[in-house]
Length: 128
Image 1: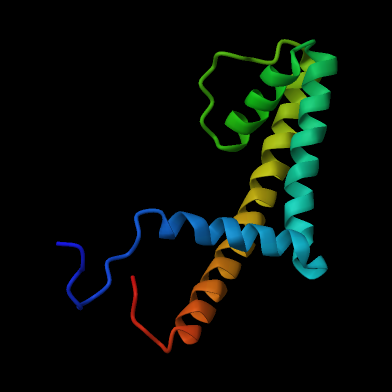
Image 2: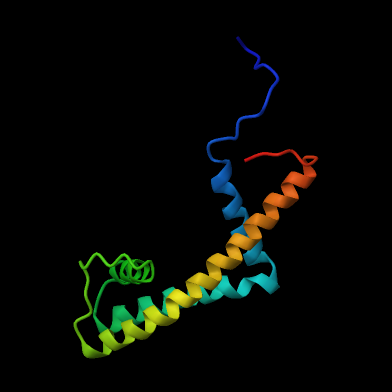
């Protein structure tokens, strides 16, 4: 009962979740791929500061609103009241979604490259 029979390896439950995190860490460490990460962080910081100052929201509410808006979820629990904030939100969404697409494209490319490198290191095993 202690040993498993030899046969095809079953993938670990969390194996697919760790690879994108590793790819993200590598993107942060390598100067050539750091740009999209810094742009997304800058976007969240600028949006959080703006809504915190202009709408007088807490930092938590401001970060939450930025994340939900850029994810195009928009629950409607927080809504900009001022005209300035409404206009900022329009520009923020149009710019932010483009930056997020670029970021996730770079992350996906790095994740796939890491997956390929891992397969080659394992001798070309076909693992899902």
